[in-house]
Length: 145
Image (cartoon, rainbow, N blue to C red; front, side, top):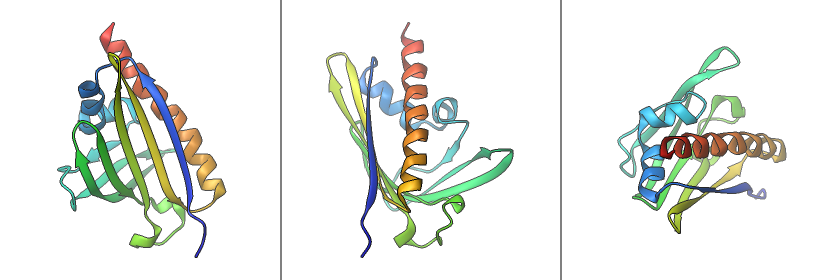
């Protein structure tokens, strides 16, 4: 058994938890802060989630399954990308946990990603999550002003 490579990042957002939840689960909003990703799912546990976009000029399609959907506090889904170099089998899918907590009038969002392929994949993930979470914060806070 190999060690589970994981990463976790949190960010404080000056927006109510319901607005943060809506930004995480509304495809038109996701596309605005998540690097242009187009997301398709019905958010029901057991349902597929598909992310389509373009990276370095090439189209991609990442897939996964919704595991938990508990508005407005917790979303869990799997994620697999052909870029990972791993086969598209459940054992190769990462698990992404989004947890929201109220902090005063704002929200703390924590994202944990586990079952990463390697330390190199973890480093890439951490860089990407840093950008994405800052984008989300900027997207939500700019709408409030």
